[in-house]
Image 1 (cartoon, helix red, strand yellow):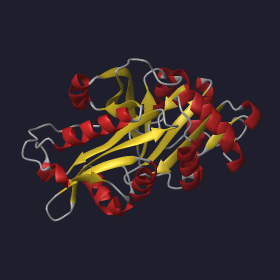
Image 2 (image 1 turned 90 degrees about the horizontal axis):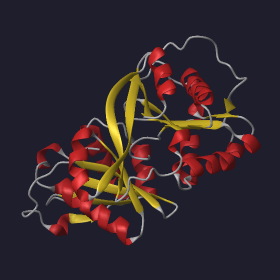
Image 3 (image 1 turned 90 degrees about the vertical axis):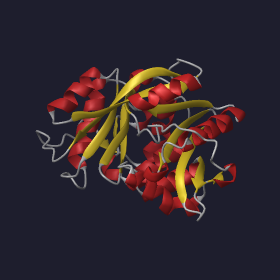
Amino acid sequence: MTLETGPTDSLPDRRLRGLTLADLADGVALSTEAGWNQNATDWRYLLAHGLGWGYEDPSGRLRATAMLLPYEDSIAWICMVLVTAGWRKRGLATMLLRHCIEAGEQRGWQLGLDATPAGRQVYLPLGFSDCYPIARMTAEGLQIPGPADRSRCRPMQESDLPAVGDLDAAVAGAARHDLLRSLFSRAPDLCWVCGPPENLRGFCLGRDGLNSDQIGPIVARHQDSAIALARQALLSRRQPARRVCIDVTEEQCAFRDWLQTVGFQVERNFVRMMKMTTRKVGRPAALFAIAGPELS
């Protein structure tokens, strides 16, 4: 997440308002202009499950956004901080970010975000602290060696979702049942599990983005399971030639090395940051890939 700074004295507060589903098209236009991967389905989920604010121009067109996506009324991720090109350097992003922080703190939520290196310099003075790095790894036209191996993984079924939700909550630090069900419904080809529901060793989900497929979250008890899950998802994609990205957490060196052997490269880096704490939320040792900076 990047952040534009600048003076805010000339910005009328009356143009700051809450976002609704009616803002779907303007939101997609903003993220598309920025080159981000969110599509209409992503925005629809965020607007339905999150809290968002936008800044509109005199004609009523949305020019900037920022959102909070809460989980279990305890953790909320700041996301979709966007400003259209002609309105940058006016302090809009800072205004909206401060609004998100105030709204989240009033509700008692622990606030987090995934920042670009440039954005990190702005978030540090606002009370955010580093937790751990994340690398976005991308590939295109992958040729995964060897045939599919169903002995280690199997396609996720709807009946697996309660067990998947329990394992995810332990790792993410909060229950995210709506998110998991949404991902399962939109990209079943990317959804795999290791083990039976009563002894789940790991799972993988994903989604179709505007520019690429995104695989994640990937949660597993062991790195071998994480690699098997990612491999199966890559082999099973409906459009195997399409660009694909995976946001890998720092601790998973062997997983990252495997991705590089099959053709992934690091495109950019993020830093996971939390406000007023350096405590790592959940159990990141079992987290191999996040769902994406906007979903975390």
